[in-house]
Length: 587
Image (cartoon, rainbow, N blue to C red):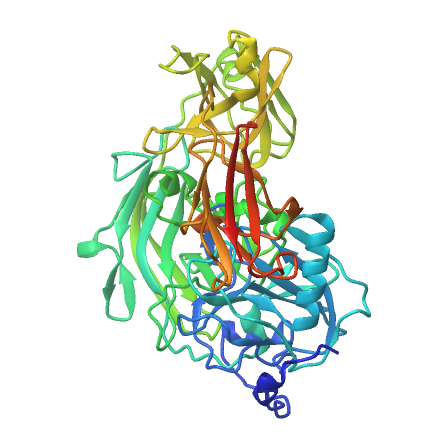
């Protein structure tokens, strides 16, 4: 059992009443009966549950793994164990989940609580002892199963804003303990009001053959969806002309009662002339496969505009379990010329449904035959095979199953840019996603020996600005791994990190201060390590990476009041540039 401060004992929750059963129509029935509609878990907070995000929402390179519960824009609400169990994992990191707690339950599920401000006292003391023993802020701990037993309704932590959180809230997950698959939290019957159907924003069509086209103008057309009575449709009743095989996409969001946040849908279905071509249900996913989101969406559009469009074409290497059904991988193929009906149904987990319906006019596509020689030259890369590409000055190693589809990988070279030490290598197309990292080795033996430890692989963002891609020097080459095709070269990072106290430190009397705060930043390769000492002894500075902030809260490691103390902060960046800040203070 975990002890609770006396001041919070009155905040223990009431026990929930007996399990209830709700009979819903359509998608809600399927979603909630998949794992049982009975109340398996109590809420993790005692405040009304309003959501800022739902399970499986589309994020950059990953699906959202749980729900985000609003905490009224403040930190410090008690967080309760949702069922009996034991603390199986405690993780602290500067970004990501920040302070996170995992509880295994006898029913086969693990609950996860993230972005916490702090843990309950016994857990907090255990974590702190481990951090000092290891001299590390970031820890990933797996306590013995019997160390922290908890009961449903016990306070285990307090809500916060740590890690990669963009505002105070509780990130909450329910995972399958055996597989560690994330499951849709809203399947478990929490009291969250949602009577609003999804909104359909855009509809897209993709020509899937070389000679194909949409509206005779290009391979892709994106249309704003217009609400017209019971359906969403295309503007002005437009009927696109489709030449050859094609696929369909949709941009959609869902909203809930009493909150302005734009969440993700639960289900998408595509019908062509009443035939089901595609069915997506966001009920579970493996965190190992979460990057396959980049194949689920129209990745090229996302790279260019940051719009996330569900692409209802299933790439050969997209094995997401949430894609329940597809016909011909979602590629629509007609033999006749004429009108055909496209219908897309989008629903949330409560069964609120919106429908887009429109017609397309199909024209068959003539595909001219090609010679065996041309076919051999155009032979695409096989995504199931490792691809090892050697060009002048660069080696590219793409592992098997890194690509989602058949791709003809190309690499071109342009002259060296000012300030760089190698030509710029244009590797394939940044609009193509990778599921696994590829390894790059760029010849960089022109770099003077004294600067080689400061060399980095350099890529470029959408604005064309150079960005560090890491890497290490090895036998005349800069070698590193990346998830992204695009432009790469080699440059130097010679600028050390910046250390700046958030208060006047040197010579100051800090006897009335509760903590020391220091800002750290780096201009290129990023912060790699930091170490703070007082009078030569390591002390725990907590790192808030999103705010570039280090905070040490005065404790027994700086106990003497009225005495003079020496603080030293040493910060190292990704290539080993070091900065040291020293100050003397009284306390």
